[in-house]
Length: 553
Image 1 (cartoon, helix red, strand yellow):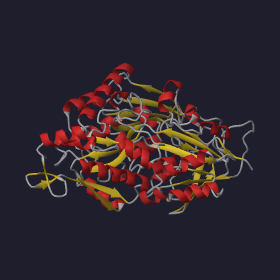
Image 2 (cartoon, rainbow, N blue to C red; image 1 turned 120 degrees about the vertical axis):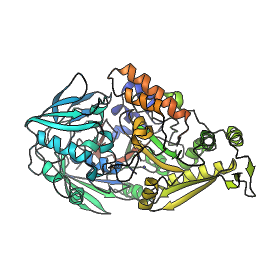
Image 3 (spheres, rainbow, N blue to C red; image 1 turned 90 degrees about the vertical axis):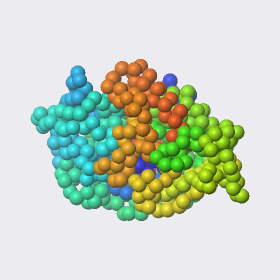
């Protein structure tokens, strides 16, 4: 899945205090973050072994744009700008910038002391090469390319001044530039064939990629020349770690067992069944935070029956006992995300959290009204001789816990007369079906640090699949001219209250259309050995950064 796709007191390292109470997950072991920091000074040297569940399809985050890619990219790429935990934008590779009054030109004044790890200097040429690469249909950039559809061209004024021209104003432009998906790569490396650059992309970050052993690990080494850290970092200069070994351990219990046995130093995607044992393990500490964007969901295809009828869509949503499924499948460690934005997203409103709660009585009334009033011998509703069937393709890469969650949706929806077919297939086959609109529900998510995600996943602008590897980001097929106008107006103003009002209206329209069964926020869930210090989450997407991390020798 793409970027759209699968707290303790540690939240205060990520979120502003005003949001803390709403955003922290209810973890009993919050106090265990004491292991993350103590009086010991950072030590340089050593290797950190980090284990995660999913392997990227390509290490260049410009290509496609899946979350495993941006976790890796955060270790070796820098961005033009950075974002702090309050959502403010700060310099990084760009030392300053000017925005034209019409919002169509961004003049970036670049640092002159940055070098990529292949020896190529960072200049305005690199900015142009990267943006052109993201926007090029041949790159098949589902995420970065989708974010910068407004990009027109880059004008090189001199070696360290670049003017980026947009085709229309884009108030979220600096926000998306702060994401690792739009990290800046060496133009020399980008000139190589795409597959070669996927294997070993080159950045200017604190680590460089040494080798990718597929289905096993990625090896990183420290960049000794690094001295241009973002403002949210705890130090400047080279990283403390000499090396990172980034392992892939897909099986959840094996991943947690490796941490318990001290075979790895930190794991991502802590399985829910292991969370309570991890909280009670004095040798571990936890770091967790929800990621912003559109939460984990099943998006309903409105382009064909039965979900071309809003009454049937609402009935399906109200037939799904998501609260019950989250409790039983995730041991009450995952909380519900009921609206189209996760609470960590700018301009999120809680008013839509309960817009489509479980209500089988109302579901039955709606289905009767929609003409699905008869039932066959199996208890499945019928209309004009057709069964009320819902096709949901399941990728092979979908986690076992998410698969079980959808099995529970299948069971509760059957009680109101839906025949839900969970159709297992390899990822390539599911992607092909999605590109052809051959599904009734598409399982996914979209992680991003801007409420503009509403435009990306619901506006008619993103119904086509041009240049994005056969994917249409608007997987519901929803098309509403009033909604389109609202989300585009939100990009024309930088006034905070105007944007808040417009995105409130957009959330209201999306919720009222019953386009998604939203389940839970995507969450970065780390369990870490107490010998490891200062693993942190970068503020834009809450993904892991190992720049400040160090290990006790």
